[in-house]
Amino acid sequence: MSEEEKQGISINFGLEAFEILKYEYKGSEKDIDLKELGFQVQFKHHADIEGSTFSIEFKITAQLGRDKPVELGHIITRTTYSLSNMDDLINEDGDFILPKGLAITLLSIALSTTRGALVAKSEENILSEAILPLADPKEMYETSPLKGELDVK
Image 1: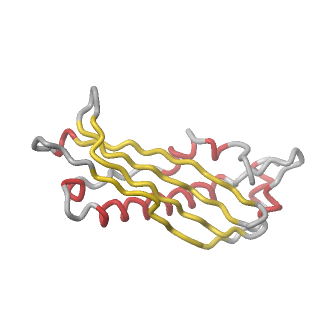
Image 2: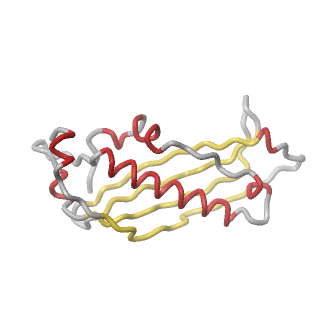
């Protein structure tokens, strides 16, 4: 199924669930310079054709230092969407292919929600003072497995 063919398919989505799977703050015994604080952003997806759901799981890790970063803490979230007409996104080879615009939208919502959850969970520690920088979901999409054929349940 080409990108042009996928564009003609009408897919509706809704937010089914947002879960904080894990939050951990390890802290640091030394004073933290916020300029030395960085973040690592990772995500994976899961498509369930039978359940008509698509999930994105984010792990955001706060790290101190550049050369040999030390983990200060992390959050893992899962954002689950209900998708209509998921069967229409399966190509002739049986592979599930998510249209680019939809994939970027779902990534953006999941990342923004995770970003807010990180701020809320970090209320009593230094991570609340270092807001996760904005990331471009288009760039994330271009370097992710969402761009190709996706594994399904």
